Image (tube, rainbow, N blue to C red; front, side):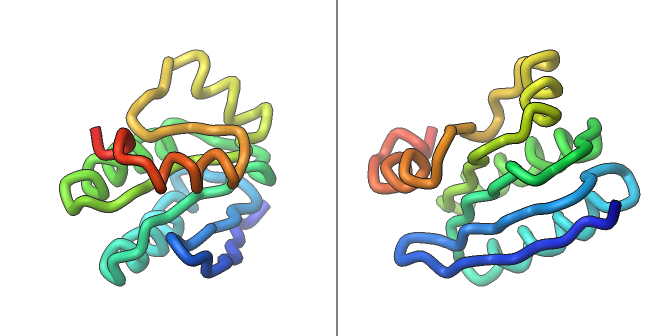
Length: 117
């Protein structure tokens, strides 16, 4: 399944909806999009609720970009992860990027200061 994206401009950030499979063949597309938003100085919430496959290339991507966003004083958070992504995150104990259940939780986190590490 190809990887597709849509986005919503919110007052504090961009909400990026990701659909499909994040793997070695598609992770660069996601990286390019996140890099674009970082270069535009956007904070980003990534909705993974419609991701059907997520391998370690996606994990490494989020780890790398999570650090880069923090270094540039920007916010990257993952919301609404699918059971497939949740399983991967649980197995590897992923904690490089904040992961919350809802967009509202992510926005509350963004309004606070603790997300900057």
